[in-house]
Image (cartoon, rainbow, N blue to C red; front, top):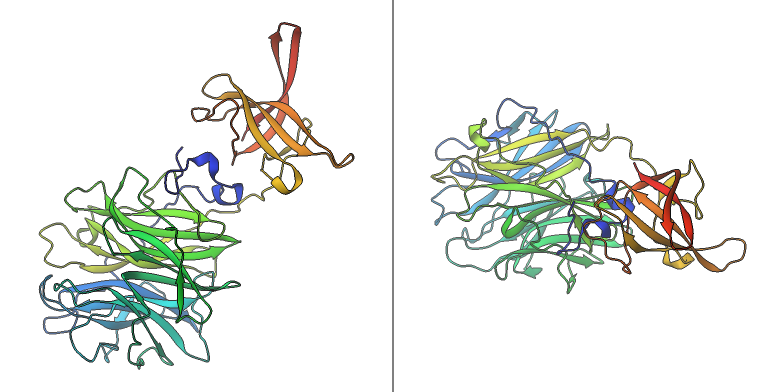
Length: 431
């Protein structure tokens, strides 16, 4: 059960994060693409990707990058489509709605300023959008820019470059200010970085990468992050090549974090793969955004590519819905010392003297551990030794500290023989 951030195992995931690692059953709930290539001669007749969606007053607006030309000779401009339900869209007659004046730089991977739940956030009545740009096919530098709009149709001219080697941003405004995650494309393999800002224009990039290649399915790039913050936990969906040496297919992974910097990956990644039965998304899925809807479910709008030859770098825009994790149980620390019937998590709380270390590994699913805690009556640090049952112990080492994301129930006692007679341990059964 390997949940990794840069190679750290599942046992490191805090309980608040680990409880998000439930199965994600994304349901494709449309018969075909929600947006397809434009007709011959239109600005998006060969390539479309990177949807950015906003819901306001019961209407959905979807901006996307579209272009003409061959893969080596293309310039992307920004298109707009609207919908009443988020699944059936009509393209705007004013398309394209944003482009660079030099007709050489592309408008790529738009990202709207969002509230933590993914809903759009206007500032001074205006939409704010960040996007990448480059002169594609010519080895051009990827740069980050922004623009604003009152109606989503008329956009200000792109700003000067805000960041270099930055691609496919996602931006939230939280209590800590503006937070951005993006792909650093300065060298291969691509990785995901986090940046912060007080105004959305001057960005400070964290020195340490947020997410790097660390799971077997990932290949060469981590790209197209889309981030929300729900119930105090950051949630990220991101793309990578899916065990594809020759880049034939991609998939979507999921990671979660408490601070937006240290991420833990889902042990069942990838959570969304292409569907060979749907020709318009048979090989690639990626470059999109996730939003939490009013009913608590999550909707993902994403771009796709059909099977080779890849004449269209991206071929269609699609959508899928996940009902969400359901009612997540509250994270309740287990009382120490525990008593029969108690249920909770052996959480590590250093500030009050709680930690957990392995004393002895019994077999693949049983271990004896020592749980340290601060006694409330005496205010002294002490410990209790307990028997864990139903845990994966393959990464346990005697004498080492361990973090346990599982919820345990105190079910009884376990006796063992010792040189001084029998010894009894309280049994904590993983639920």
